[in-house]
Image (tube, rainbow, N blue to C red):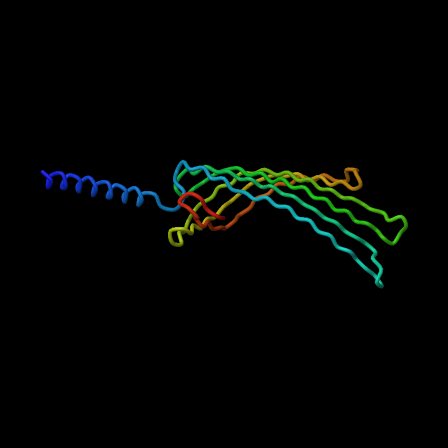
Length: 177
């Protein structure tokens, strides 16, 4: 009886171990049809510089900028994704003329908005974790400039872009671009 129980237990254990291995092999690194990808970037910068002439400060410039660029796509196949992206940015520059008394400060601000669509094709796997892609995008944008609180200029643009890139998969479904 012990031999039968041990034999049945061994068969179940082997079957369970074999099933686990098959599941592990079926996964792998990369995207699959029906997956959704989300990526983007967020940035902030600030700076300050002072110009001098003959040992005397003449001008001080302070800058700051912020940008947020989210992107989302849907995989039509294991290698082709289509999606949308947004581009939001804001910047500020203050220039102070220190050669006059009292000092005079001029302030400039910019605000930008853009949106677009893209198509991405993964064409080469470099090992399990590295996947290369080519991407084409189409978008539009607008930008507004203000100087000392007065609107000075507005622009609109339209663009087409081509990009090559690579993903490194940290986990089976999460990658660094």
